Length: 390
Image 1 (tube, rainbow, N blue to C red):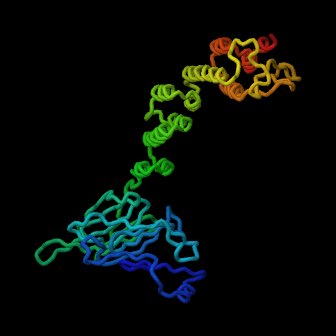
Image 2 (image 1 turned 90 degrees about the horizontal axis):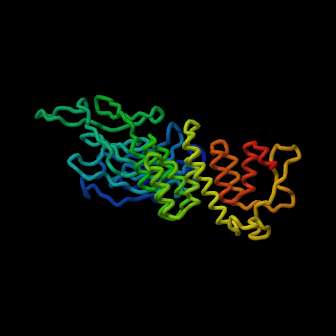
Image 3 (image 1 turned 120 degrees about the vertical axis):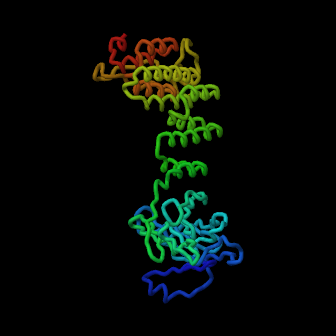
């Protein structure tokens, strides 16, 4: 229940008869300081209390109160048993700057806006930003001529058909439908400005808008030093962040792992029709993985014992044996230590992208880095059993 300055909340378990039988009018849940003389921009002839349910749902989750100083709005927790817990995240949104039209006469809630009815027209106030998003004059059919021939408004209020999703404006003599066109088109931008990225993506209507959201997330992650996360978001922005620019940025930042993450995501986005680009990225990734192995293993390439067991607790195997089935594949012998994580990651990559790697180039890279075991593994992936046996 509401007046121009007070909002009361009543709760009870059961029907309305129990509610009215068990309640007395105690202290208001909200009381606003306001008087009609405080300014002409306050509420007009009436005060209204509205509840709103998302989509076509029956159970409301938000409310708006056309109060004296503004629209008091917030969320509803209808399952709460205590009056103080029913309202959540509630605050007052001041009316737009006062003008000659005076205060609003009525109000309606849509998915993204509060519609305020004034003597001279309707204003749509964005529920998120509080800014005037659009305005429309009162229909001429809702005007009447005064004694001197001057037109004056006869509008009375706004009313909503929630299930049909229609808002009506009515006067003493007519009923008008308020038509809303693409009212959510700017919501992605508003959520983005508030760093509410999931909500921004939900309201994006084009790939360009989604690219912008991902680009902002990428830049934020990069500045904060979360380079792996930045790489993932950069990979999702083909138009907002050019490939060469992002790759150079990660290289200059000295982040090879983030660069690998970025390249893997870009590689996964390529279609089979883009075979040359797939091969180029896969080859670059192969070299990055080999550089990573060189840095991770305790012995440099060319060491007579590059895979000596016991150092750092993990090593690459010094040999592999055929499976009992013959040439069906390779498996480490039971006596060998487990693979170093960097080697295992590289072999997983080889297994995933063996079909797009150029055979000659990959063999040359593996040989130049002294990765004989990985050469055998790569040959087994290709089904080159002669090389495996040799």
